[in-house]
Amino acid sequence: MAEERNAIEIPASEAVEAATEGTVSTGMSQAAPAKAAPVRRYVQPPRLCYFCVERVTIDYKNIDLLRRFVNERARIKPRRQTGTCAKCQRRLSVAIKRARHLGLLPFTAEHVRKYGWGGV
Ligand SMILES: [Zn+2]
Image 1 (tube, rainbow, N blue to C red):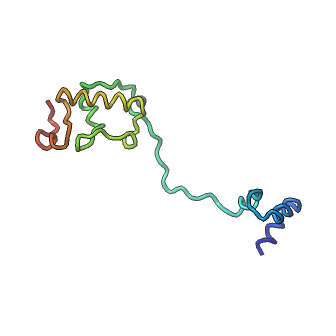
Image 2 (image 1 turned 90 degrees about the vertical axis):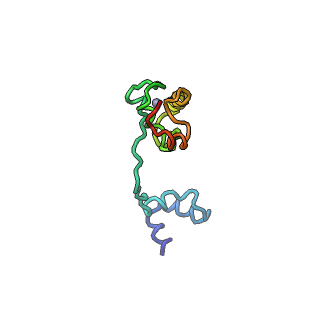
Image 3 (image 1 turned 180 degrees about the vertical axis):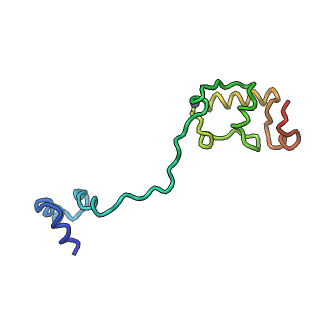
């Protein structure tokens, strides 16, 4: 049944080749019309680096900005969450660490619990 249908679609010379080989390696024309492309249910939005797009310079003194890239446990958010590019993420992590050293940002969740995000 299936072989008959293929024989109609494929030219005679190719059909003979496919039959003799018995593999699907040359039979790209066989599979193409039968299967439809799978439906993409989730389309990921394009990742844009905030610092590159907005042309914002990363400054350790700009705590309100840095706080957006730190989670509620005071940890630096990964690039996969924020969309920051590698170059900016490196600078961002240095800036956050500088801010922590100066006491502008907390180091740990315990610091957040004790002193909150009030800063300084
Ligand atoms: Zn960037």
